[in-house]
Length: 271
Ligand SMILES: [Zn+2]
Image 1 (cartoon, rainbow, N blue to C red):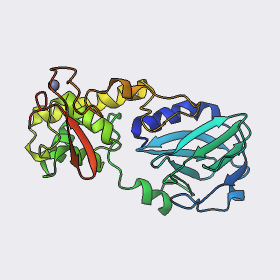
Image 2: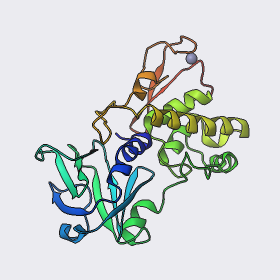
Image 3: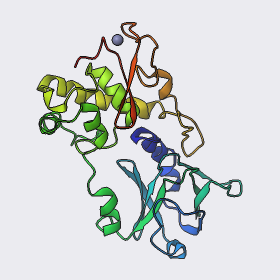
């Protein structure tokens, strides 16, 4: 599913092109995870001012109100001047003076939600509980360590929960833990300041590199130009069960943690 880097890559691939566009029409397909929350016609005439990201949400700032977009499990956005007629999995079109923004989402766990402001209940419900952004200065190593001290769960679960830091999904949690040399099953509160600092740096490094590489295309992800990402070609542990560790040659192990697959090197990563 699209994680933070894929959402950020998507944002960068159309934010500048759509800025300043006026909405000329809205087409809704089948119902998505949440309803739009306003009459589609109410959006016509509004201007798209900017596209921001918060966690895995894209925020389309309009001159009045905003749209919150989530890609769900299988969603992707395209933005183009010319596009084919909508297919069976295209469930939201925002027609604008500068091009058509289309959400393609076969599994329909994605959504587009309108809110009058970021403080409105519809927005707070989705954004209110999100942790700090991993690529912002506000993601502080000491505060991260203090948060880990309060949590007894395995470190990978704590990363995925998104309360201490937002947007570190399955692929990137596995990769960051490898980089920091920490076993995914280690209890968060057992990590001392040094290992916490290492993990803090690893989370930032892994996510920044994934954004640079255009995200991961394991589940057919592509950006708003329709281009695929390449991060998955260089993972150290994710999806590499039984293959030799790229550092020490030991076969990579896999286990299940809370319904998700976790990959690690039993030699390089210490409990
Ligand atoms: Zn290894």
